[in-house]
Length: 368
Ligand code: G6P
Image 1 (cartoon, helix red, strand yellow):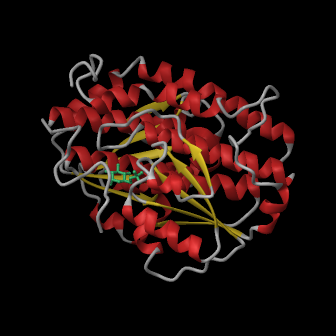
Image 2: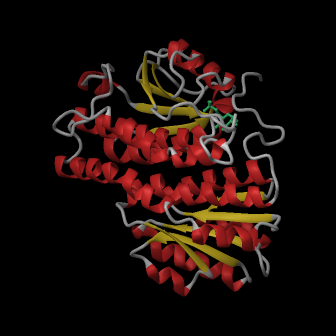
Image 3: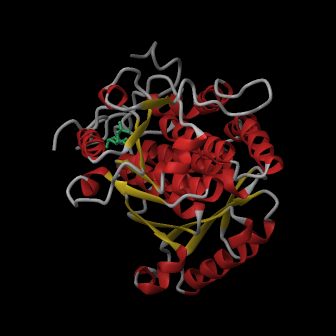
């Protein structure tokens, strides 16, 4: 066990640190010499893609959160409506799926029962099945028309980290592939995305080299019993994942909500001292997030902001700030989730939790 952890205290920490490599592999194995995405042997032709009128992304847990980012990026770059659903809802509600549907299953293990059942249901209804899977030869992989593998390597910790970031990378690659093959994406923009994606592993290595701020925050906050995560757009998707990480390994009651929805209920729970983690990495939505931070601060919340290095204005509103390197808004999830994983890890460690094997949770849920 100790040898497998390669000097790290936990598999989760080791896997967090393996993310630059996993992301690099997942990306670079799919780029040809001209920097164009090829989806392994997958033959989704222009005709196939033009024949689809919608995409369904279906998954569970962390993989579902990757799907939320996928929706945003695929709709934007491939110009097709995308629905995202948790597998346990999808399979029981008679969803409208036919032979014009591209069904994308996301699963680290490829053995999650609900995801597999949802895939079978979509297949019976005539959908084309593309899966994004980490475990080679798993059930989801075997039953799909096409498989696009994440190159995360084996993930041991129950709380998923490197599987998530490599799933995100696959979402960008599928979106770029679809947009390019259909001819609906401007090539200058296409290459900008590739360029930005290629810079992610180094940016992550820089971030991982200095955990000081995160350790300080963990020490200040580890005794808390409640936390709220807020964000808009892609930050909202990442806030769900950040919140899940924290609750699953530290057992803190953690809740994520799209920041614009706060005033429709959740703000009633904000009182003096309540911890709010406000994700504000999206330039387009930055001012809106500053207003949301003001709203919760006016009720006494203690706010930890998460922003790009270039957006130092956040310091005027937030009590503390975690910075990520500057990047294109759309790829921020690949960077912003990592401090949230580390924060969850460090808080759980200070609370003395069994990080790699949290109570009541399984790595792969193969039962109903
Ligand atoms: C379990 C794990 C999660 C995972 C989810 C889906 O709940 O604890 O970490 O996200 O299953 O698993 P999959 O293997 O389908 O990605």
